[in-house]
Length: 422
Image 1: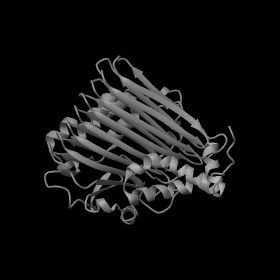
Image 2 (image 1 turned 30 degrees about the vertical axis):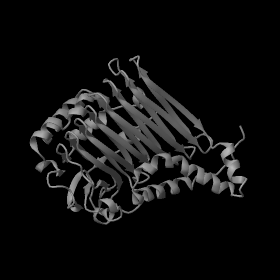
Image 3 (image 1 turned 90 degrees about the vertical axis):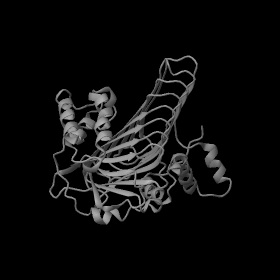
Image 4 (image 1 turned 180 degrees about the horizontal axis):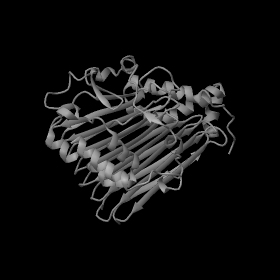
């Protein structure tokens, strides 16, 4: 099965060119620094210690650790996973389910997702999660990805891949956390990852995604979701690490009355570029979709990119689709490139979208000053509350604390300039 995926992706790569700034979907995302690197296999050192630094109390017995793209049974603990649920590498995964679905969504995108094709060509294993019909998994599944550096001067590259398939009326919460597999916050490596999700009728997936990679690393991710009738997909993501980070999120509705909720929070510090490209295609009636994107650019050399495309097709009558992007620029010359895009072909729908780019509001600062609160402290509180609208939905305290430590470190380097009265 893995050999078929590799062969298919290699054939795709033969017919495409890797993106540049002249490629429309990469116009604001310069991947030239990645393309200029010389890559080699990761060394794997330090992962044992790193795994213990990312606990999730609620998932202490439902944690899958993936080191440099390969599931590690030694570091994982899956003792609370129900017996009829499969979690593990592709070698022991149910053949029929995996052969039908592995790579099917990335193949459908073809040259539109070049790094997903590269992932399939180079993947050495695939982590698989198979939930049978009617099964509700009580505990969250914590998938911890650890990326290690190379043993030489070249940049290490890994290609993790996750396949999630859920039967009719099943339910699961999955938390994907990406972190360095070694000590040191400025180690360079490249994580090129793909997650494919197949939701059958009435299935419900709550998906958390937290990226806290090292400051000099590169992180490219594609999440591809297929929603059948009456299924529910919720994605809460926080992207705060890596020098270059991009998330291609694509959701295809293949049945009526689906529910899709997308929440994203990102912080762009010194020299960081964070990009979210999302596509949601609604082609069946009575679907509900809500997308919230929030970005803080805290350095003049930081850049946030958001390109959100929601397409409501002719058959998607009685659809309710909402999209909002809010962005904070904390310093002069900080940059966000925001493009919310709502395409409506159906005529009996309830849809809206909006975008705001600003600094903190004067009336908010006045509220704190009137109560004797220091302006610097007030600004910090307002910045954290701005992101909390998204991060609170991650729910798990330890996960939120790890993410907040990285955010605090990034924001501590931003000058707290006075807020101008408008």
